[in-house]
Image 1 (tube, rainbow, N blue to C red):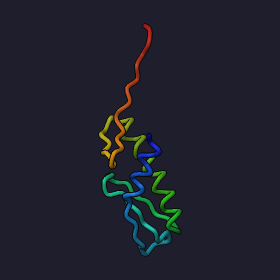
Image 2 (image 1 turned 90 degrees about the horizontal axis):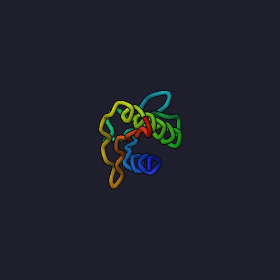
Image 3 (image 1 turned 30 degrees about the horizontal axis):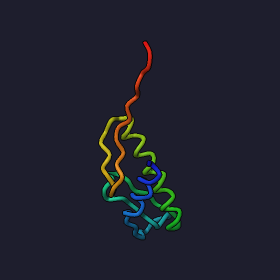
Image 4 (image 1 turned 180 degrees about the vertical axis):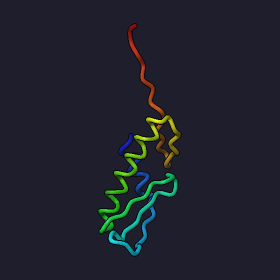
Length: 84
């Protein structure tokens, strides 16, 4: 499910060329603070996928909401303890 969420987020990414050492810039508008750069569009896309993955981990660990991307939704995971 996480892989599909990341792919869905990447499909909504916006890219532009900026004046920088890594001129390709990408962001996912629905995911606050998620952006990356790269020397090529493909590198930028790979970097953006890694940023989304890390962003998800942080939000899950902190119990923060994760917005739906199309039909994909990731909810807080609950840990169940068995036994006493």
